[in-house]
Length: 149
Image 1 (cartoon, helix red, strand yellow):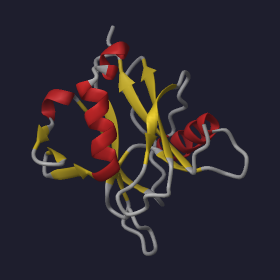
Image 2: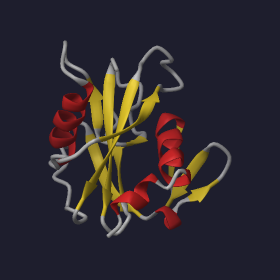
Image 3: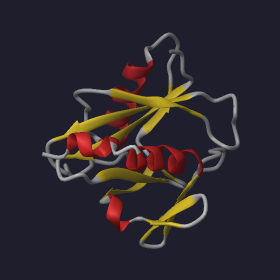
C-alpha cells in the first residue's frame, strides 16, 4: 500500500499512548498541532520503514513490530495519504524528542481523554483532525488493548 507519509501509534503494556505536540514552525501546515511520531516518505521507501525512521528521529524510540491501522489523510491535504501503524512497547520510555520538530511528548491513558465534537482534549491540549480520527479508531476498536499485559 503506497503512502506519502506514515505515523506510529506507540502503546505501552499499561495501555498508554504516546502523543506529541509539534513545534511551531513557519511553513509547516501542522505547526503546533498534536500528532503521532511520523513524517514524509522518502522516494521508494516502504511505508513501514518511513514509520520506523520518523519515530526514531522524532522521539528516539524504534518500534519493533508494526501493525497497520489504516490509511488516513489530513483535513487540509486530502491527497496526502498517511499510513498509520500501531506498535506495542514494553514500557513508557522517556522520549528523546527532536526539538526542531517536536515540542513535547505525552504518554496518555485513554481514560484521560475528554471527547467533545470531533476532538479529544487532554490537559488543555486539543487533539483534532487526522490525529483525532486515528486515536478515535485505536480507542473505539480497542486496538490499544492488544498491547496491554
